[in-house]
Length: 157
Image (tube, rainbow, N blue to C red; front, side, top):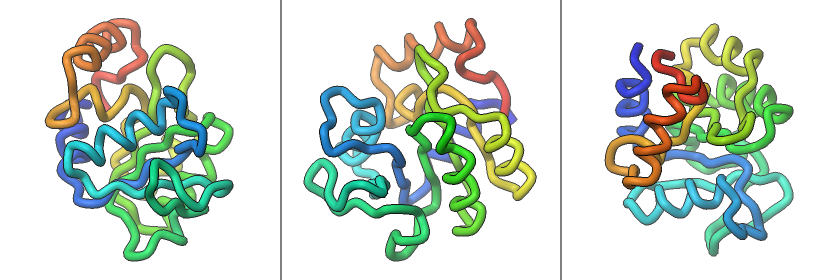
C-alpha cells in the first residue's frame, strides 16, 4: 500500500493516541503532533507513564489504561520503546500505528514494524502524520517530499 493511502486511512481514525508526549513540551515532537491533531479536531489521547496531565489534558501510562481505547497510535518515543508500545497496540486491537521519524532515527524499530504487520496492523514506519491530509501544513508537506527522496518517509508500507 502506498504511504499516502495508509496516511489517509490513519488520519480517518476517530481516536488517536500519541505516545511520548512530554510534561515539558518545549518543541518536543510528540507534543507538536498531539497539539496539532487536537487543534485540527481529532480526539487525541496523551500517553506517558510519567505524567498524569499533558498540554492541559489527562495523560495515561499506557494504551491499556485509556478509557474506551483508541483506533490509532502515533509512536513518538525512542525506538527502544517502540516494541513495547507495538505489543500494547496489538493487545488493544489497534488497527493503525505510525512510528514518527523526521530528521533523526525517530521512533522507527524494525522489530516493532514486523510485530505490528504480523498482527494485521497497518504500520507507517517513518514520516509524520502532520505531513499528510487535513493535519498537514506547507512546511511538513515540503519535509515529506524531501524525506521521501532520502528514505526517511517510506513510499510504501
